[in-house]
Length: 43
Image (cartoon, rainbow, N blue to C red; front, side, top):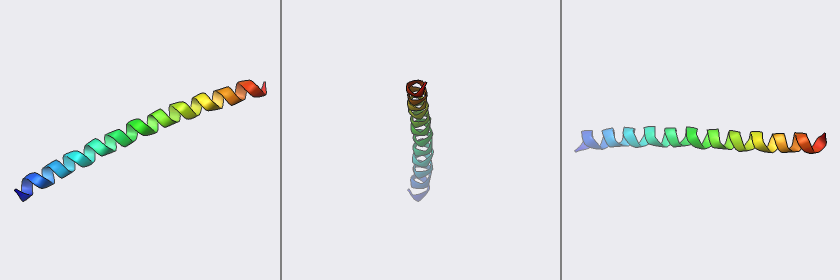
């Protein structure tokens, strides 16, 4: 039972890390969009 718990815990950790990366990528894309908008407004 303990062994199974550690495996599922590791799987959960990996899933969370993958989600974190996806969120980071989305935030970077949004940030780039905002940067592009501000650059255009300055010109």
